[in-house]
Length: 122
Image 1 (cartoon, rainbow, N blue to C red):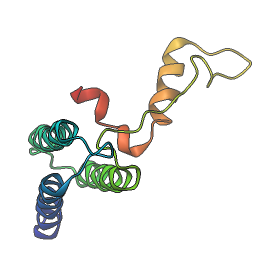
Image 2: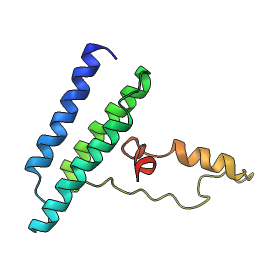
Image 3: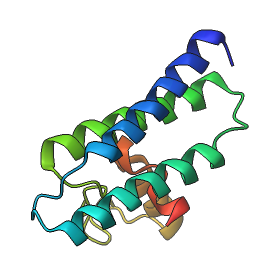
Image 4: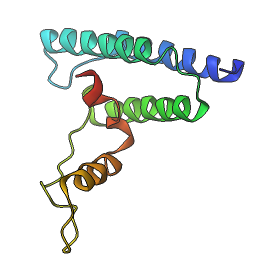
């Protein structure tokens, strides 16, 4: 990892924890705020620990993009959790009919960047 990339990752890590410290739940309830702050810290620690040994620059860039997207979406919608997407079952297949394996591949490719690591950790 280059020095610039390392600084960018550490900056994102600090930004997430600053965000968690200042976070206010949209409902305004104290217990919701505490639960969401805990979720933000736990999710950040888990994902950064999981990815700390990455050496491929493309994978590191994908993780940085995912992190940035999740921060921006969380701030915009006032929810720390990843926004769910709905893909109807077998909705991506062509009329010629494809196997289940190709269906899974299409679903994986159509997943937004902010949800790439969500299924792996949860």
